[in-house]
Length: 270
Image (cartoon, rainbow, N blue to C red; front, side, top):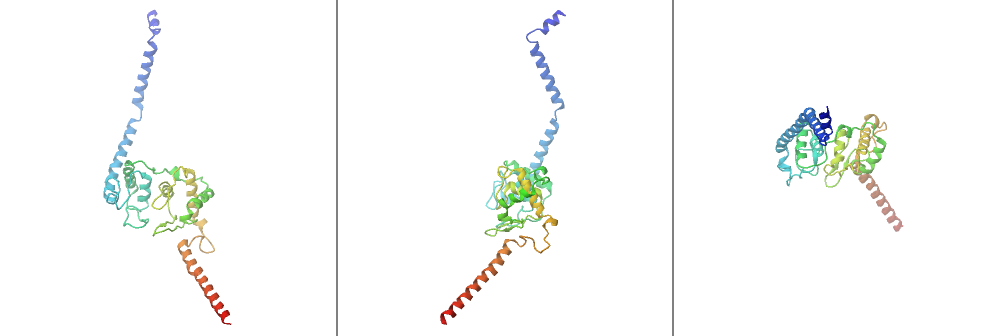
């Protein structure tokens, strides 16, 4: 007993106990840590990038370059992030049918799994905006009234205050927001596709993006957007309304000018 007590009082006893405790903790962590899960996720991501590169080579490389460096027919994709790919390919805008002032929305040619793989490959070429989660773009509980204020301040100049879209310069246009999914609305604000400016979190935080989405969805609600009196406000769009103003407004001014000139000539003769 005296020998054991003496060993316990040895100066190195505390160090030995600490080392044994650390070794036991490390062994237990190694035994129970989710290493397999992390390794599986890493393997899955690598496979997604590999498959995405194959899809990219077939459908995208001819315009955007074999390494996403861009060509004369398409911009570089290095640093655009997975959100831009998910929006462009997920709305059918890419792959483009032909060059033009603006690439229109069309039928989607890839499945969502394939879109995710292409997005994974492009994201591996350079960091950029990440595809949002459902929690980020879900408008449940958002403030549609505040979203309307934000929309009229930041979006209505191009998309019309009811989201019907409108004409821009040189053959470009702001598309209608009718039927656009919440996810793609969020990604458009994230990435600024084509002629649209981007609204990163420093300009429009997640909550404000959700408010805008809530407002757009409320505008697209048939029960709320219907107009018993005829066409809804902004229903014709700036092109038709501008043409009406040009023909009838200018025509009226010309008719008034002719009438004034004719009566002035008669007054001089008399």
